[in-house]
Length: 206
Image (cartoon, rainbow, N blue to C red):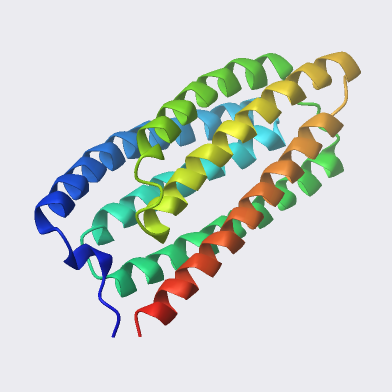
């Protein structure tokens, strides 16, 4: 059996793990707070993009919680947790598509002003999270997955902000829906990469 990288340099590992845990607790709180805000404002504003992004924040908060639980456990356990998180990301991508179809059926034009200020706040939270997690992204598939989540959400927020401007200019719901599709695609692509890395870790650990 291949030895887990966490078996080496226990003093350094303990310091790295403690630092990662502190960061994960902080970004978990930030992301869950943004989930509550975005789903509330997304429903109020009839914005598919905000609703999709709120699901990303929930996925991130869930991911950080799982990673906190498994961070100092065996590589095999961490890799399985990564597979669970990737499955959640795929489910949320499907949810975003379903919300888009529902809004098309109602012809609901989102409130661009709400989309704008919420996406700016969300962007700030995700940039902070991504910067904090950057140094730990190469440790294993779990830490890589949580960094990818924050990076993806920062890109999502920029897209939502652009969509708000396009909704203002066009007076239609289509920019909002296109951004929701972009978010769903980004989440799906990241989930596939996480699954590939986690499966490799499981094979290497045998």
